[in-house]
Image (cartoon, rainbow, N blue to C red; front, side, top):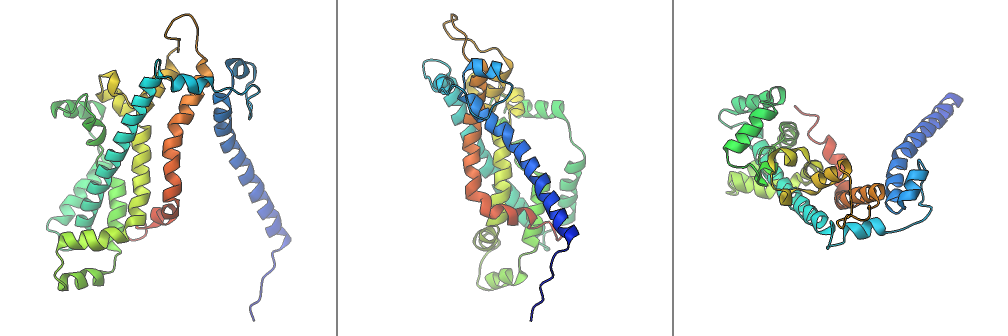
Length: 292
């Protein structure tokens, strides 16, 4: 017979305190997001007159009309969104390819020079060239003012690669031996066995890479000179910092609500990716973090 231990008064009080604290923290984190969404549908007068609100007093979609107005700034916003989506998709694929291949190679015990290459990776986690040498290198390689400058310099994250390497090291060695007996090559073992088993891990770090590419504006600010190539985050940054005026010059656009609407438009695409990877997220974060 299984005995169930009842909670004492102290445990119940502690649970109540924990739930109250977590509820307060959750509310404090959710309120800014709700305010941004509400302000994107509010008029300029509502935003100026009210310090904070969770529902727009006079709902309007004028800010979204301005964003998607192709005769005005809508063309710039939509073009930058397409650029950000392209850089995010291609950049994430490049990140996962190089991260997975290098991690798998360094996880093999029979790799010649394994310790040397591993130490080189660890060295980059401690020492870096800095912004100016990186800029000169990017320019010297002919990647300045191209989308390659947003993808190639950060093709591999040393920390993420080490976590994926640890995951590959935890795979049962019997699978590799059985595949080798059946005549499978190293590339075949990697493609047919290691990669399918590592989907939770790769999905998690793929999300990290995608969010990093989507939110990156500083790299574009450094390496892109043509404004037509600006990704969405850099366009958003310029909109937030500069005064937004009507193209005709005779009427000022709703600056604050326009900024909020652009933030919402920029957040929704990457937010839609998370539900598809949520089931892999919890397991993928912890996987590979135990064995060194």
